[in-house]
Length: 590
Image: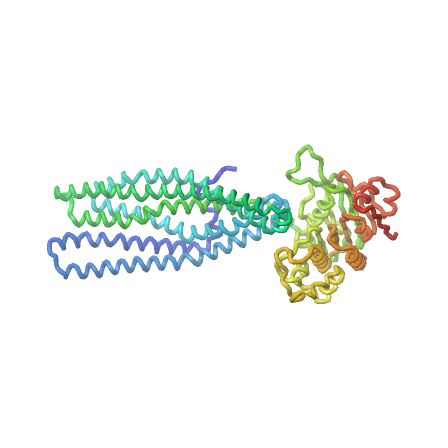
């Protein structure tokens, strides 16, 4: 992909800032008017110095003081007006960009989130968008206003004395070359800094989430040292940025002073030769002083612009990501879903899998009748969890199709599909919200009766003993609860959704034997009316199902009752024995 230039990159943000542009434009005009009022002061004083030198009276001085004061007040008013105009719309733009980014992250498939570190996404949603807001409200306005001020200021200088103005311009010209060179070099460093900030945010997040593991293995000092090294690399990059900006600032500060000194010598010479008046030289010098801030500001405004360019690039790296799992243009609907789930010659491989490696799922054929439950078993790594993830389009099939009631799930919108299929994962994730909202995530309009029934089926009545009962706010990821409690709430969440198809990826692995037995007994009532695909990672889970499907070498090699497969299939016996680490075999009633 061809790399965009700074201007074309920044222009991409303006469709998101259309509503703010009128006030940003007015703010730019206000900033420019403030500079114009400042430039008017030397123009006014030019005649005053010449006239006052000939006829020094208070009648000349007092009106001049009042006029200068008035121009100064007008300049200050324009500064206040600029700030009032641009600050509020900038925050609206930032909020809109953040909302757009968050919606995109929700829309992107799981495969995207598998690859992207969460810290990189967090840094884009916070630091990068804040940088864009600051540039839009401050950097852009002042950059445009100051450049126009410099152009107007040089026109004024030429009106005073074209020789002095030309000398000043020639000496100042290297600044533009330095600015162009700075832009090319600084952009690389700025992007590196933002990426390193994202990596550092990822390290913090991972260490916080994994604090129990780090403490358990006594690796706190190791991870702290690693974090310190990463922070040191970021510090070095930031120092490099600061040195580049300070070097540019040095040139933008010293060269104008040198130019002014040369012009002063020439101006005094011209005065002695009668080619220039004292008032003209005074006005010339005062005008260059007014131009000092616009010229000096170009350095840090350029650096801010380049930082904003990198931020825009990083924002659009996410926004431009193609959503491979999208809704169809003409979607179908399931009016009264029965729950027949069919896998027809389903193939699947992960995008980053080596080309020579066969598909993880290599031709799956399986049909689950409405109200039937099937346990899916196989050795570790055979693709059981991947198969269940395909049913809700968390991943997309590589080939073949999955149908619900005869309709290809790709012909349904994702919202429609996921309203009919609910999942409970082995790794149960809860949100920093109330127990009620966590359980009713899939169906917020459920009644109290439905909520109570879901909690009873999952044996999650412990929630009533929490400090605020159902309104107790669960900590981040539910880590304030035990593993078994989290799994029971996750199972209650799936049950409360009242789906036509229920997919259970070993949701009972963290439960003790007695609780597991009670949950299984309660689940049987649910499974009588619900189609279920149950991934079994231990033998006891198999007894929940009507039939068992054996996944081997990417295919379903056998389907039948547990007793039948146990008697006829050697690989099935091997899988069952390997699942039961204690050597205990379960007996399923036929």
